Length: 243
Image 1 (cartoon, rainbow, N blue to C red):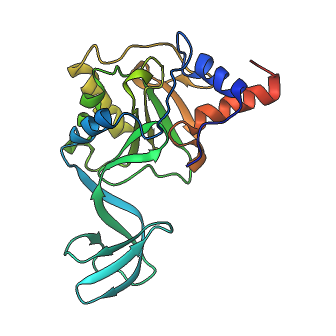
Image 2 (image 1 turned 135 degrees about the horizontal axis):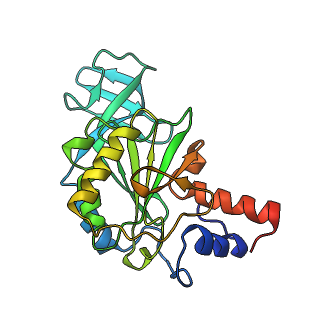
Image 3 (image 1 turned 30 degrees about the vertical axis):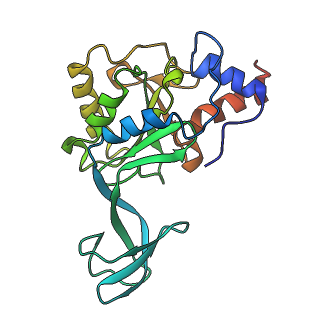
């Protein structure tokens, strides 16, 4: 996925108007984040696995199969690693994989739903969750629970402890058919951890959403995770000359 824009005006505008930081953005040398903190977030999933529907069956023999998502090819040789079992070469299949994605997006730890990432073709909701550093692992744990087994979403959490003083410390990308389920998980999390969220306001280009959270509508893969925020800030700079 693309890295944050190199244009200093866009990054500055994003930091002030979208992330709503009180001061300058911290220096984040590693896109993969703080290794110890990322390991802690990964442990908070308790090894949760789910179905990833982005694969197609390439070849198969007796007791083995090759599947590919166009970038990654996997060799599967254990029963029950993909469905449907009667798929033919070229068919779409779901592969059971760990739900944690530690390096899918720069500066984010990503967790997919039990049925995979968000469905994209017709637009999807982006919910901005201003979770504190102290509660981040509990949020990941909540979204790794059985309540999320039947959902498709992408939860993207800051992967460095110094980067939580922002309005978008966690983002949930979710399609319309799964949004109600995600809101139920979030509502239960907020009730159980009433001090877990610290509102900093509404990021530029978003609107008021459920549970008092900022919401936006994403379009396509480039808007996933931080993509929407950077796009809106780039558009603001290009059209109004905002700084």
